[in-house]
Image (spheres, one colour):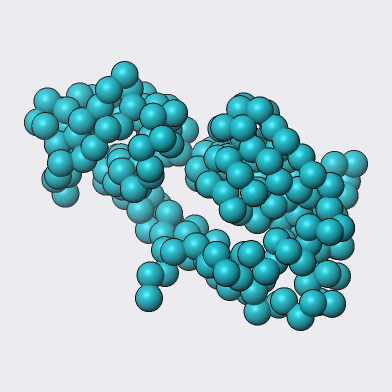
Length: 208
């Protein structure tokens, strides 16, 4: 079983359940899709096409780059101290949104708690994986992990996102350190870059 694989069948059933009671949206690149809530009411957002960046509003840390299909906010508003994320379109995006309380009502009516649990479990797995890669590791290990993650993106996505900015926003490692490591890896022919974008990885050493 590939635990990294997005649970698409469960996600599709959730999407069909929620769509009829929702409001559609379309966004341009760099436009904010969600800042957590509107007028104190929390919402669920379903991204049906496009690529979006997820930021932690408290310090603007880049949490992840996500591709459609994707659901944000199944549990939004359930805890007063829960962390709400800011979602920013990286490409033209479309989808729909609805109040999170309505989301949970529809899930209850359609008996789709298993599907919701599968989706949230996958999100938890992705966040755990991110913590393993970044938390408590040295700068090179974090940069290496980010490069390996970017190498798994399709070519179209890699061509849109600069390596330097992505790593710095995701790790808060200084730009000078990131630049030094990238330059050394390019010189050693460990990575291939073009105009600041990652083209490919040949082999990344475990130690710098």
